[in-house]
Image (cartoon, rainbow, N blue to C red; front, side):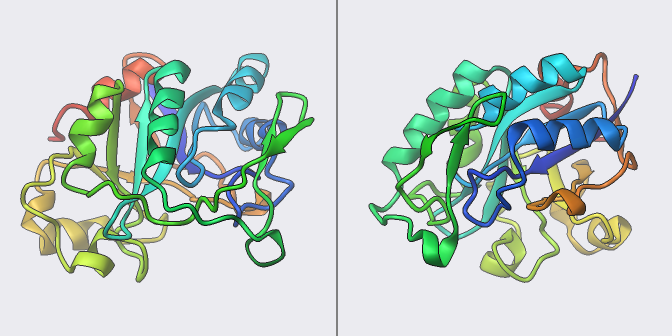
Length: 239
């Protein structure tokens, strides 16, 4: 079945995410835009995924728990999980790999934990945009131990991408997908980088503001509209 998706969305837990990107607002905006599936991927935390998933159940939107991890090489990778318990366990582990740098709201913005009714549950004190000590080479196997999959985010960007940080794809990087920004030319990257042969191309908004979320445009052919079906799809090589 065709599942229209956006697998890279931030909430107000990300310090660079607008405070209007609450779990309720984000999920219901996805519904207005005609999406079937979204993933909540805050920086280095899955702290608002559970609340967003509860909103998704009411709104009829599949919400996949996830995270945008910053590796030791300062490469952003999207990590997606089959269930919230695994996502939160991975999130707890990632926190142990982060440097003990406190967030400064006046500079970076607030980092809000919210419930499904957009009530504030608390604030994350650790600055979530810092690089973890997890290497990009070790990340796929690590995420797999928590029932998840990962792929390099926005590889066409000039910062925090695998190409901007490393210049090329590490040949030992074991992933089956990669992400481009919506306007990027996928054929260009397939032709230029032999590493991408057989990989699945994903395009998502990486929205930090409600107005940056996109209408239904990109879809995946999944067995069903669910997180496990998505992960099965991403665990297979593309055609």
